Image 1 (tube, rainbow, N blue to C red):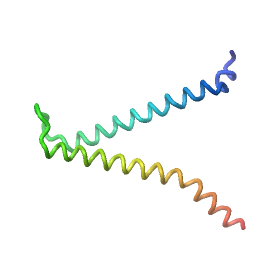
Image 2 (spheres, rainbow, N blue to C red; image 1 turned 90 degrees about the horizontal axis):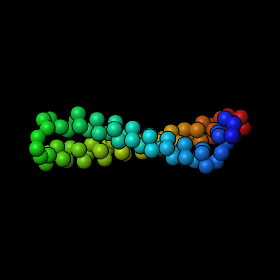
Image 3 (spheres, helix red, strand yellow; image 1 turned 90 degrees about the vertical axis):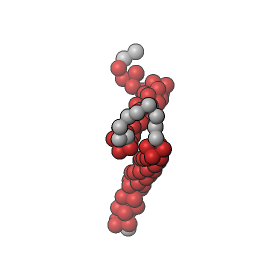
Image 4 (cartoon, one colour; image 1 turned 45 degrees about the vertical axis):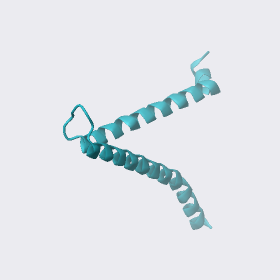
Length: 90
C-alpha cells in the first residue's frame, strides 16, 4: 500500500479521527484538572474538606460550560460569516 492509499482508507481515517478526539479529550481533562487543582486545593491532606469539594465541583462545571459555549460559538462562526457575506452580495 502506498502513502496515498493509507490516507484515503476510510477505516484508517475514522481510526485517526477517533484517536484525535480521545487525545483532545485527555488534554481537556488534564487542563481542567490543573486549573481546578490550583484554584481549589490550598494544602493537600488525607481527606478532601467540604469547601474544597464544592470548589472542585463548581470549577469543573464552569470549565465544562465554558468549553461547550466556546465550541458552540466556533461552530456558529462559519455559518454567521457565510450568511453575512451572502447578505452583502445580494
